[in-house]
Length: 409
Image 1 (cartoon, rainbow, N blue to C red):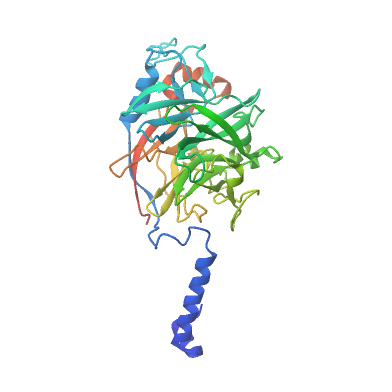
Image 2: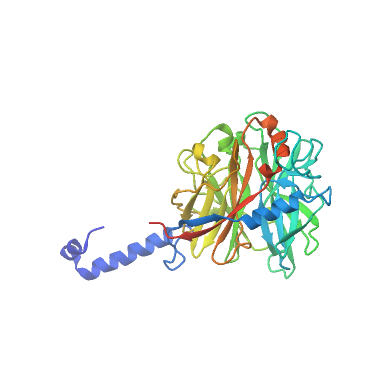
């Protein structure tokens, strides 16, 4: 664009100002939905400080070690949470151990609480918290397997109207459907995204609806599953998803986003996907973050809104992704996403363990601090993982940190 001096030489100050205003209007109209919103309040974000949340981590240890029941949660990953209208908090988990936990020492003589080899494992579970205490495990698995060799992992959830405009509320839980597979699909081949409807306040599963089927995509690493995180805003639910690029040794996976009007999560026809320039139905979405090398997301990530800024938390790309949480920021769910910012490494037990699946819990924190969980697992041979996390039950439970955000330099 010509500067003021050249504009005066060509046509005078008035015409230059008019051209500037017209260009600004064109640029704003070309932005994706939401990019021009916020009145300029959207600013960069990074983690300013963080600290271990020992009390919340300890609460899951207390509940998991309680031997009063044999059908309740003793460890799991895929940690998500949802605050219910009556104040309770619903905690959702993927693969979960049930059964008793024995006090230390374990059979190897180590000073760890342990579970024996007969402890049952289910593909998903839900635990209810009230008054800051974990109270009960719902009958597990909460979401039955869709077919032999397939299972459902619950991810993000929200309370919404039963249908658009309805006064009755229900819980919607996003589910990832996966099937058993061979290497590199040791954690299952992605099949589809489903939505379960749970009644309130009973939390009974009423129905499960498939909303995004990916079985026709020939390359499993390019299949997109939605629901790793969601943000509700202005009558819409923005649902984020990712592909399985890391399963085939790409340093980072890509992130995608869809949107659904309030009350429509269980209606496949209500879903709109960002294709790179517009929200459309019935199409393959375009990635909003990820170049498959330096930038991108881990197998699961989380997004929150801080003021008018969206902040995405993920494990870092490459080897650092086994221990380091990093973040990106944007002024719209569709991006552009800026980052990664400098990461931090939360506490890990000693030995060969890894952190993964950082998830924000906005309804659990307070005092201006955001609660973030991360899952911990053994970093050895896959065939020995079950034995390792049973020998030391602390290896397969969520841990928590609290953090503060500030504008990035």
